Each structure stands twice: as structure tokens, then as C-alpha cells.
Length: 479
Image 1 (cartoon, helix red, strand yellow):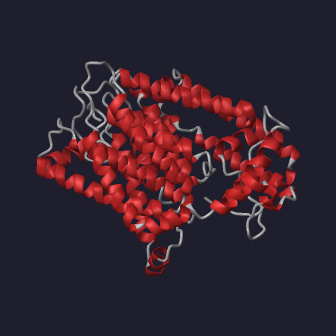
Image 2 (tube, one colour):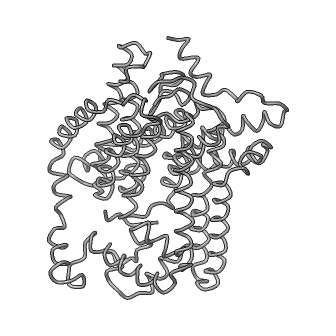
Image 3 (tube, helix red, strand yellow):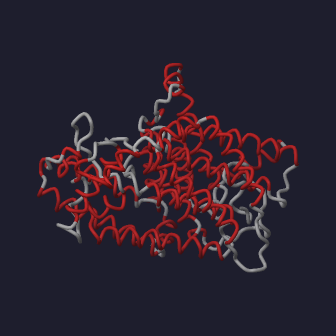
């Protein structure tokens, strides 16, 4: 067992074969250290994550092979195009809203960072075992942040039914990341239960038991966030994972993944969790039925202001403003200034403070970047998924990891309907890792999965898969 553990640890820190020259060696070590530092702090603290991202960027500049390989990828060039477009838009908008230039350039920087996924992607792609290690570090740092933020007063507030975002402060993004952690642990359990797993039964059962406890832990965090938009997204993401496992095939001869028993077990677990949190869930789900009923019967203007009607006011405002500049939008960082200039009380919270985003990511994109911007983003996402499926067909991606990524894409897609936290550090960094993993597979330079079948255990015992080399699988919270 000790030998197996040491082998896995070596796999996490090994450099790719064929490294020649001191410069390349320094670049590889710096990039690996930056990757793991970034992953650990990505959901823990902004300073450590930024240092890790900076180290990866410096290492990328030093790596000749990185530029030779990245420049052959259309997704790399497309990301540079949209970065150029964002830069042009903020330069233009800053001349029209000079009083808000600081906000504009800050948000433009955050927009640009969303498309720097090729930086972590390169360092992840160098050794396949870095994929589970990166995910384990990300969710490990997230767990550490939760545990260190809990005190007696906070526990008292939570037991009394108060919302909390723990170390994030903002409940919505906290709930979102809890949902992502549950997806990772769910896939980890599926891999450990796979009949082809070479682990001894006792060891597998222990790991599955710990993963179930982890799911209960993060599910409680998901409920504590009391974010209905995230709850809805999670209810879509979980079936997406099972659908991907059930129906995605490289060929008709590939054996099916058994999903019925895990689905039943998950259903029983859900019933248990619902029973313990029934009052919190039902009160949150039904809290605004009267307001929404008044919107239907009497119109939005006569309905009392609540989290749902605030959103409707913001969406109406956003659509009207976007139609004034449909193709290029108003520019990065202009939402708050335009909302502030409007005298509609539905655009201000109960404290009288104007909202700084529209609580809908799709609307926010066209509002700030226009149709041109959303087309660029759609092309990036479409090409990313296309490259992922191509890598899957070439046996570079396990079915389990494919299902995990699809589950995250579904989570993001539905969550984005009711919120816009995409420029916050704890969403940006999550995205850089998920999109970086997705782009890492096409960058693996023909590296195929080393074993056939549906799963292997191989080199790593971290979620959501044991190994990537075997065929295994400033804002307002109103949601």
C-alpha cells in the first residue's frame, strides 16, 4: 500500500519525459508549482491563486514547446480574438463613461481572465495525472476555507435558518461551488464502484464511505446557501451526469456503465437530506409565490419588490438598454453606471443601493459586449466541447471525466439564467480550472488512455477520478 501511495505521489509531481535544457526544466517546475498553488487557493483565497496564475504565466513565456503547440490550436487563437475584442470595447466605453473608468478597466481585466484558460490547460496537459490532482487541490482548499470559517456564532445562525456564504461571504457562489464539489464526489464514487477497479474491496468501501460523507457535507452547504437558482441548476446537472454515463459511447460495442443502483442510492440520500432540511427548503421555494402571482395578475409595476421581482425589473431594464446597442453593447463595467442613472426603484435593493449586475449572465454578456461578444463566447464554448468530444473518441478522455465535465457545463448553463458571478474571483478561478481541464485533453499530443474497458484505478485516488491516464472514468445576493 505504501509503495502504491508513493507511486501516486510521484505521478502528481513528475515532469513530462523528454525535457532537455535548463530553461525547459525550470519552466516545467515553475509551471507545475504554479498550477498546484493556483488550484489549492482557487476557492480559498485570491492572493495565493493570483500568485499561482502568475507563476504559470511566467513559466509559459519561458516554454518554447508551449508556444509551438498552443499556436496550432484554433481555440487558443479564438481566445486571443475575444480578448482583443474586450480590450477594444473597454477603450471605447471608457471615453463615454469617464467617471466609471476604474470599474470598467477592472471588469475588463476580469472578463479577459476568463479566456486565459489556455494557461492552466497547458500545465495540466503535460502529465495526465495532474487532472485529478488539480481537482483534489481545488476542492481541498474549498473545504479548508469552509472549516476555518465556522464558529459557534455562525453555527447558531445557520441552525436558526439564516443564509450563509461562509468564507465567500456571498451565499450564491458558495452554493454553486458546493454543487460542483458534489458532482466531483459523485463521479469519484462511480469510479470506485466500477467492477473493473483493481482496488481491494475494503479499501474501496472505505473511500466510498468517506465520499458519501463529503457529499452530505457539501449538500448541507448547498442548502445553507438557500440559492434557488443553484438548486435548480444542480437538479439539472445530476441527471446530465447520469445521461452522459448511460448514453455516451465511442462505439456500440462499448459496455454500458451501470447507473441504476447509484441513482437509487442517490435518491435515498436525497430523501434523507430533504427530511432533515424540509422546513428550510420549502420556506425558501414558496417564499415569493404571492409576489409572482401579483406580477401575473396585476403587472410587474404593482408587485411588491422581492428577489424575484428585482430580477424581473433588471431583466426588463437590461433588454431595453441592450436593444439600443445590440451589436457591440455598452462595454465592460458599464452596468452599474447605467442602472444608477435610471430612476426605477426596482433597480435598487432594500437599502437603496443600485444593483451592479443584471442577475442573468446571458443578458449581461449582450448588455456589455453585444451580439458580437456573445457569438464569440458561444464559439469558444462550442469549439471547446467539440475538441473534448474529439479527444474522447481518440481515447484521451475517460467516460467518467467526460460526464463530470458535462455535469459542470449543465450546472453553469442553468445557473447563469438567474445570476452573474462570473467575474468574481471564486467563479473565475473555478472556470479556469474546469475549462483548463477541458482544453488540456486536446493538448495531450496524441497521448491515449493506457488501458481499455470502462475504468482503471491507476495512479491517483482523488476525485472525481482515480486516473486520467486510464480509460476511467461587489454584488447582491437575492437568489
